Length: 522
Image 1 (cartoon, rainbow, N blue to C red):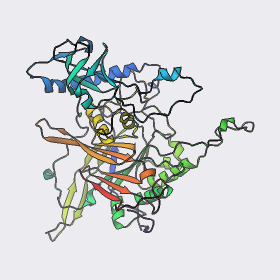
Image 2 (image 1 turned 60 degrees about the vertical axis):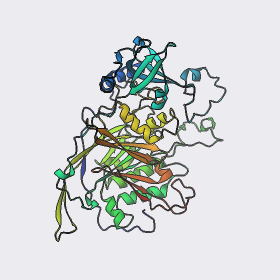
Image 3 (image 1 turned 135 degrees about the horizontal axis):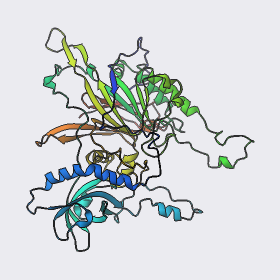
Image 4 (image 1 turned 120 degrees about the vertical axis):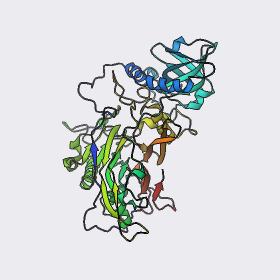
């Protein structure tokens, strides 16, 4: 782990492998909202109908492959209100969770505003929840053990197999979702088709670094850890092994919450204090957190490409997709072409160029030449709001943040609970959160703890096929964790930054036997 006791200054800057960002495909669209589509006059019902249309064919295809040929020959019903009592059938629709504890805008309007509102709930889940399935014709209630086992949230498109009961409910015996979409990038060549030495050293590895939650400006900001992070990524901190690993990092992604929410003192409602004539209500705003962030970004962008996303705590619009920061707010860092302001969520396609090096090989007297073919990886990055919102719908355990992120890939939707309990733009004729292709790497920032998992598909013969690497990135100000994802192998490394006697958040640090550099193998 990098420490303040050993910070050698390199005689020359790090030599990094080159990687480039390639343009998105039609199936990995941009989340930018142009002036023509920036309208709020449309009803939110349009996004549900559009979502159902976009995913219905995929769900139907998978359901037919799963249920066709059953002994009872279930009937496909095109509309949920056309189900037949006491006859096995299946229907496709959108899930709606009727939850008494879920926020209700009508209750907010009717509340006595002289009474302060209750604090937000940590969970919407309770035993009185009901699961509904709806389409353009109407809504039907789903019952049965299979429903509770599936762990659904509002907005998911499913196919339900069962029959209508005498009470008008639909008893489900099996359920089907869209499953993983095809992968965005072409299949990587097998190792035997590439001239690569299996015993080659890790010098050919190429990593993308991911952090989240710098929270600059918070009362317990991790200034020392952030400075250590900058020095580590620029090659100014750590020993030879640390600098070797840092030289393999091709770019940095900051997944939201770079700045901290402003906190006001209890005694001071500033707007009630007398001000001089002409004084602005924002006169007490301190620019120092943004200036500190800009200085760090300037140091980083001079060493490697940086992509920054807005998060829930950042000064950006709260509705999804959050639009990129204005480059002007980051000062000199904005003058670098390697500095990129991204939307939240954001698709990135990163191409690792072909590399060639001389690598010593055991058992040979001479060095063997190793070639790494160019590889293109698709990355889907979010700042974590959708996963944290879905977390409120589900009991934990058995659900976890990693399993929820994996479910979004199988549902083919990044933010199914939008716009019910998660604010989003009122799209009329499209739903950009639908996953028409599966990313190679799925990065989720703003998480309370680190986590990773491989989610795989089948190639049609029952064998394991392509895999997507999910990485949950926790708040750096609280944990000091930097995640490194290998663009070639999808392996994940975790680097921890800390100051002896202090935790990343500024409090006391508990004794730990970890080195601070752990390997999460695929």
